[in-house]
Length: 252
Image (cartoon, rainbow, N blue to C red; front, top):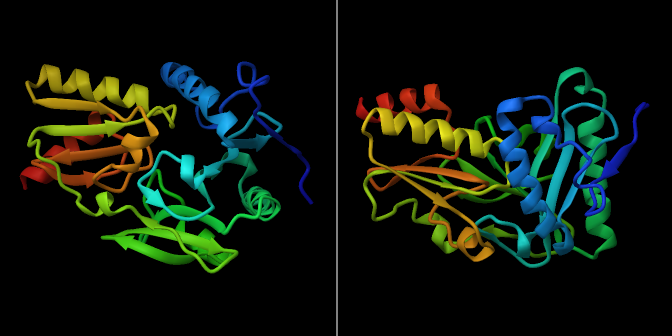
């Protein structure tokens, strides 16, 4: 039996509630500010940020697919951006409880189902495929190793947008698309920009700042996408050390 209850961030509580994933890391507080500004505009659209009513990294974040900043399309679905349970709260049933709360919302709103971005093998910054398939989700679309998982409540299924299948852009320099959906993004962008400047590496940081831009992304995108030599490389958030490793791999 769970010992804690959950609370949902509202426009009235947004300023005072913590965002679980960046709860204690000072270097990400700029990203927290950006995320809260973004959330302030998203909450009236039906965006949900539900978290444990305690100090911990336990939360689920989802939105109507039509207003979700991802290149996924479908009829009347909810899209899960993130479901995270960590630390001392892991393996206590919080993941299932939060997913069940999303499912209950979907049923009450008459949604066609729920979907989430994942991958064949477990990857950082993506939802765990095994967890979702164990709770009834099925693979409904793929791009390479990336998978769109869905729990349908009606016959229709969502899919990646046609643009997302390109995975190519015209620019050849290191190009990173990013949105403020994740509070880690701001610090990662700062680290990447500083390293590239010191190392004389051409870099283009492209903000994804509208729903229309997000829906038209030329690759799989949750809040971050990296291209090099015109080809999509990864959704993985980059700090300086990971960027160095990635660039070495692309030269090999």
